[in-house]
Image (cartoon, rainbow, N blue to C red; front, side, top):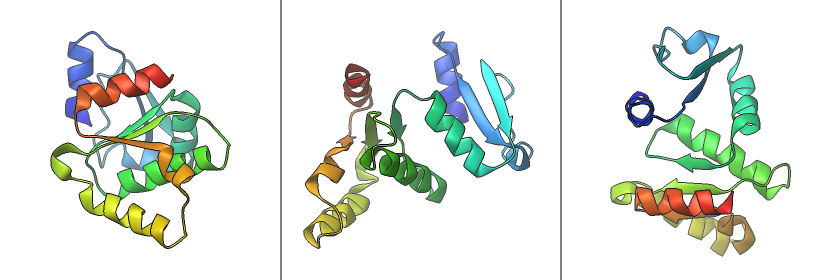
Length: 135
């Protein structure tokens, strides 16, 4: 996330960071952001992310990335928000996850309308352009 934030800042963009207090020192909160919001809990972080975001894009990441993406996707599916979402599948990183989602649909645990809420792209520029067009 730090490299992405630095790249956006170097290009003249604005970067908002939201981090729980407990992670400020563990993950070394980026002090050069346009704005850094420190909250008490992960729940508050996700709520603030939902409030501040116009769209979501998930890059390759770990369990936290998956959990945050799933929560924002669920909020969209349930109608609590209507924000475009994308999964950037760089170098096939999410191929196994996408097979899991296809199985989930095949076995009746998700409808096509659920899966349609999550756009999938492998090209960063095209995926970002698609998200921006939906805002």
